[in-house]
Image 1 (cartoon, rainbow, N blue to C red):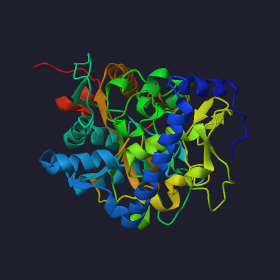
Image 2: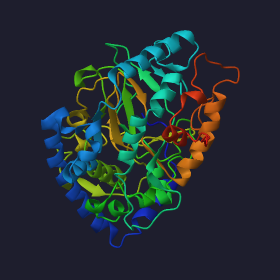
Image 3: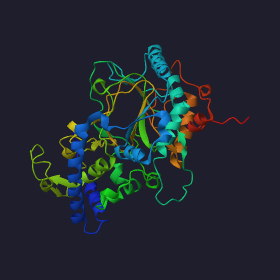
Image 4: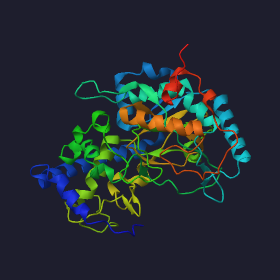
Length: 424
């Protein structure tokens, strides 16, 4: 529930955004109506097909996919990569994490009364998983789904070089339902509109030509700031895809990732939604009809973004505020995964998570901003403290069984973690 009022300066921001487009009200209204028509067709398709709508591929087949198969992954922006790591190795990591938690009962996690999501970053299993060459090669494959339209080389950018972003893990208990991860979008909140560089990523949408939007255009992402307000836990790097590695089996009915599997449509709807309002009540049976929506930039609110004391969170689409996404029917569970499988979703994808035992491991390309972050992150790894983007532990907090430099042996992994490379 939104209790904190929106600052009035966001009315000016809305006006500033749209005034960059000639005849903006007419063009954006026509674009909005076109978008709603396409959403009506695509949401019906997604709801009918269910989990089989999500692409699956074996790790060993990544480089054998046809151009058409790769384009499907780009459009749906979610993929299950099977057998990235051997089942037994993934299961062993879960056992080791369970043992770590028992040996360190003071670990931070939630829910507080029954911890399942752990604020841990440098346990030995996590370090080993991120350093696994197959995990890093899968990340590089995903990074290379991006491109530079201009074709010019970008200084400090190499999509063939994967980097590591240290994140947390979850071991969800059977039969326990909790709602800490309703539908949301990672990688920035109000920044999508407020940060000028980030906003350029959506220039086609905001100029009334959403079908031309390319969520894999890399150049605009390099300077985009996804954390203007410095909230802890808000990623300051660019992840091409968020992801996790499964350490247990999980089927659609047993708690797993859910996504809205059409990136261009969901991006377009999320970005345009603050510029339109319904002329009928939100619970009206006619809410989906395009004629019942009008262009309106007179209010400061951005539906789905929450105003906090220390910044903003979201986007968090809801059935009430984002009815055309038909979230109750289109938030699609990924197919069954086994230990060693990985699931990746685009950094701007709508997701809702009820994962079982997973380590969060995203795909991160080498860019100047990411390289700078990884250097700082490496210092925290060697010191055994939380990474730069996350809340710091108390200075007196210590853990038994953290990963160490010697656990990262492969050249590709040491580069990815920003660790010194030993020359023979």
